[in-house]
Length: 327
Image (tube, rainbow, N blue to C red; front, side, top):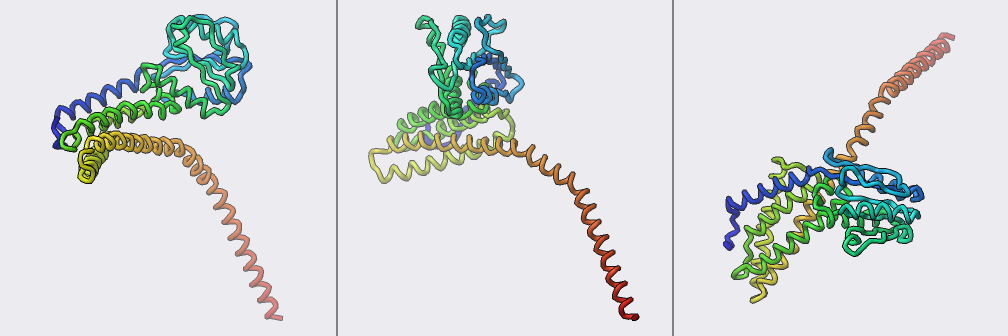
């Protein structure tokens, strides 16, 4: 591998193709079936409901109350989530029905006592997982990790359901940071192959963008420019550090490759988190501005009345003064 740091045209094309693949994964159709136990707590049901409001039109969520027996779905979903609450037999029946179809199943509940495991053989039990916690953020985080690790459509899952995005980014970081650490360790003469590491980070950036529901556009090119600059900075740091620790360049390069990739990924994810927060705040800002604008006429009328009354009072005062002077 060359260590000049220049990204070749083939690597550029590889990054673009990777971006196209990630964009296609982003819009993959996703179907999730959810069954809710009538005895489940209201807070848990609302937490699951809010979490599974899809942000992409390619995703479909079907929710139903848990019955004593569950019929096999007409259309096989990608995942099944069962919200338990105490109806053990009904939960087991629903989980078994979907597991027999080869559909991964998650039983979620506030307590493990409300999430009974179905009576299945070992092969089918691998398709069933339990996520239990009375702390809903913790519960959703566990559910998100399960969805991302289980589904072949993890990018589309993250793009559609925001609560899965951190888990997807963590998965991507683990993959690419490990790769770049290995590349750094193999670098010759204490220098890593920065071009390969940089192209890896560019792929990572595009995959994170897809996980956040961002399409492949020219705006991504601006973000990639920052990734390339970061890659050059990591290389410069690694070279400088290698001079102070002779014979340990490979370890330094590996560490910089790993930590640098993590830092880049977290910065990109934070960037999209800020954009999402701004997008969610915009309707509230518009509503506030609309309220203010709606109140302006009333405020103007009130001000006008005050001015008129003040003028009238001044006129009366002047009149009284004139009358007093004439006497």
